[in-house]
Length: 95
Image (cartoon, rainbow, N blue to C red; front, side, top):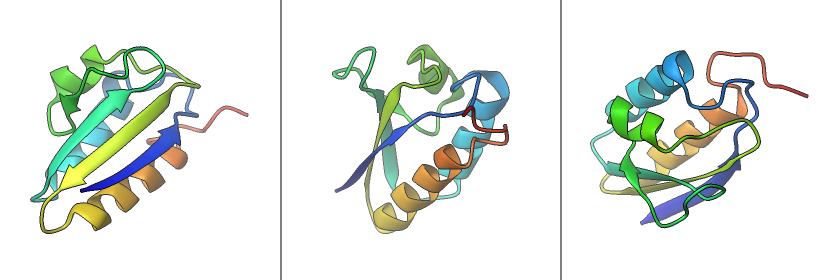
């Protein structure tokens, strides 16, 4: 299993459009990918390929997001999703 923790910097967190971008990127991988909002509820996990699951985590700007993947392309999946979050998920990251 591959795992990384990243801080969400974009203004709206993982809501609506940013969550859709995250889920779309996750869906491109064959690995099982799970995410958790370490700031709000570290025990709760959701599939990174489920828009409802991701949005229900309540990830806001400044929250720490754990991304875990298991499977053939797990390492690449985690790296790409971390890079996407760090880049602001299509929004300008807040300073």
